[in-house]
Image 1 (cartoon, rainbow, N blue to C red):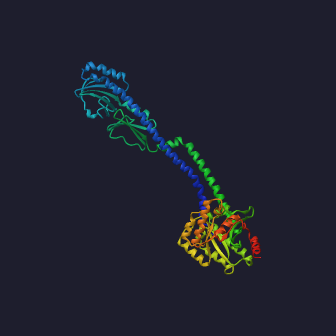
Image 2: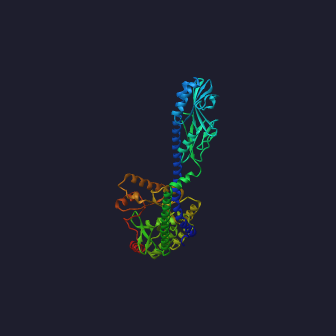
Image 3: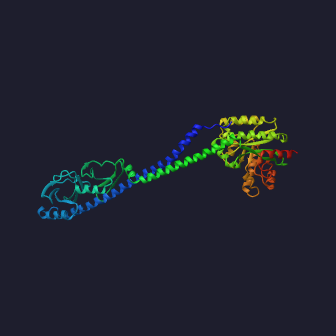
Length: 513
């Protein structure tokens, strides 16, 4: 009975797979664009900080130059110095007013002339800059004061908050910029606020001046990333959707091909198109037949005889190898029954099994049914473990092997020496035969290292009391070498190629005759 498949799950996977394939490029591409947009915002904010820093340093260069120019006048009568103060306001960009300090008090201003107001150096960050929300002249407009001092004398020059706010607006056209001086900050609206400027929701950056005690910060509000993506990445989103549609259709077509392959194998199984071919295994001492290895072939109604490497790996992947092997055992029993009079006693018959067989309880019934088709002792059944998939040493597997040995079935490791599972099988399972891979046999006399490996395998099998079958024997030199090493069983083109059942009967009768 063919191994049943979970049809509902397969149908669901066939329906979902194209959608998932379509979603992968869209989602992955969107994630990349989302990240790229974040990087673009971060870079834009950094450039904005750099531009703002350069602009404010330029403003302060003019303001500090004005203060330095009038500082030597500090302490002179205001009437004598006022003209020089006003000259700096006229000639220096961004300078709103200049003022002189003597004995810790402001006494002369370019705006008011003689004036008296105490000056507290502690109001200035690093004794240099002070950002005010306003003064009696412009109470609702920010003001930045630069202070230059020499002992108890000093000079002040001021920048109108209008120039500062205008610079913030011009530089931050795409994002907001803020000026921080000590514990106060100025925004593009011209308002001065106490405390640290709030952090921006996206791409917040800040940069401090190395020449003056101030810093600038910029960033973007929530949603700016998506706004940038919708503004600049719409063509890329269209490309992602196009790629998603292509991927979905490609997956749909591939799933259709895969499903058609599965259906074709299932059809072939139902039509019993899988047939046994037999390759003899001979005794090394006299080349007499000891048994056969049963190989699966596909007699396709249109393609003819299909090689096993073209369908067996896929049959293993899709779960059909177990019922296909069951069909092979049944057909082999029928074929050997037809030539039972030519079979020597204890004729070995070997079948390849995979890890899937070891998880299938019906394998024991299949072996029991195969042996029941012959007289007791007429055939000896051998199961050869292939290494395409690792057999796990579970309690179920150990119990199955014990039951198989109870039936008289022997276990062989196929292609020994080529896979990672070979040595682990020897440790974990009770096996009876080692089949040496043909790649080692082919290098007899040509490669010293392979010869050493081959000798080690033969010595290991002798120490473990295991029978050895050498595969791929094609020359007399190889046969003679293996006979000299006391290898009991040989298999290869030197003795016979795989043959169909009708030819097997003829060869058996010819050998017995």
